[in-house]
Image 1 (cartoon, rainbow, N blue to C red):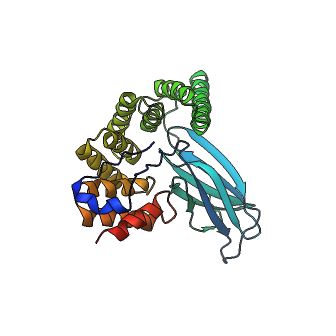
Image 2 (image 1 turned 135 degrees about the vertical axis):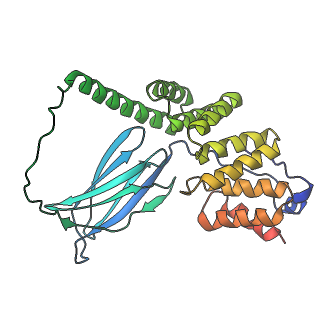
Image 3 (image 1 turned 30 degrees about the vertical axis):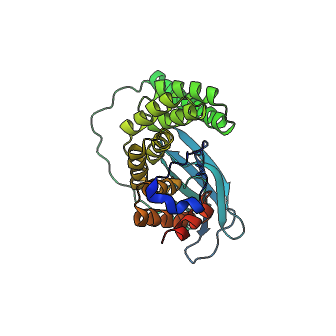
Length: 302
């Protein structure tokens, strides 16, 4: 997607360095990576330890990797939106873990060192039994397990479709996913993104708004709406949504929103605020897709 160059009189100083403002398309696969290190209690690297990563979100994902000779491990292709990851490590009788880890979008997150320790020994104790529990509905349990498995498979297919830019298939799969999980804000965001790529702006806007309704902290959805409004010359709405994207992006998953917000502020003639937003973007994303342009724009602001 390209963001139209709508800089007004308050930003004429930028005309010398900016002839076209290009907006990077929102990331479709919504993936990132994690890396870390495992040691024993003395600080020595734990080689060949088994590292397990479990995704806690609308769907379930489970990955396993091994540490190298330096006790280091890395895993790419991890979902970066909608949930967090638990990392557990095991080597022999030793275990360790790190919980609620966020995966940065299109970047590598570093997990604090995990220290392997012996599991505590629990002495046997006398247990008083309460009222007998009712019978377990095995059929119901099998049904829920099957549904969870189907949803996991469905979301994997969604991710493959988005990565392949097959938006018609992605839309069909996401629509099916929403029938199973009506509160899936991430599904609505992806739907908005898919419709946007098909140039169906009305549908994109509708689904971004639904994502925000379900999750008022959806920085990606705010950013998507900001882009739509910018291209429609609705500058007040665009700035408002870019600002919301920046405010809700506490995990720094949509760093480009700071760049876009800086452009919107400049269009309003708020050059000092625009410079700060651009500087924040460059500081957080020194190698970002718009970093070079942002640096030029910062230099142009007196």
